[in-house]
Amino acid sequence: MAVPSASWAAGSVTYAHHDRLRETQLAALHPVRARLESDARTAADRPTGKRGQGALVRWSDRQGAHTATATVSPRLRAGDTTTIWLDGRGTVAAPPVTTTEAVSTAVGVGLVTAAGATVIVGGAWQGVRRALDRRRFAQWDHEWETVEPQWTMRHPR
Image 1 (tube, rainbow, N blue to C red):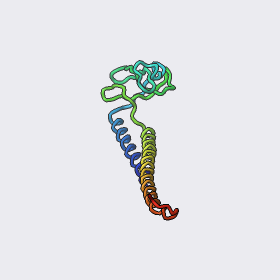
Image 2: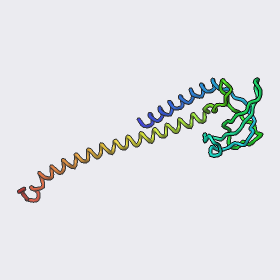
Image 3: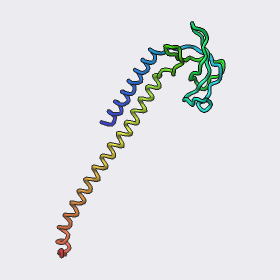
Image 4: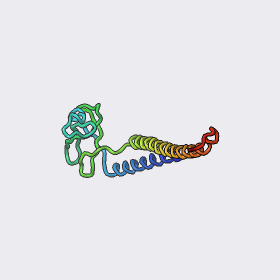
């Protein structure tokens, strides 16, 4: 009962954390439609080495036209439009955590917790079992030292 409970608790806490993080991000960021000025590039293609796919994007607002590098879907090409996220200063920001990401992270944490708890409980069980076996075998050896001479008619010297 402890392993499933620990797994559920870990997953629930992780999901709640990501849900709060998403709400915070959505309150601080706003989406903007932008047009790609270049094809999406992988991290290996970019000097920054950041994860994800980066592309040069252009968007317009009340202050005029803006250009920046943003994380986009890898299948997008120059001329395609996408949604980027801006912070309160108008700087491109990472997109907020999605519900799918929150759920998958929570499930992953729950599974890792279950595996870890199973290893710990199984290891503790094996340790207790071996200690009890050693004690029982030592007791049998002691009893045999007492009984064996009488059965074989040998007497200790």
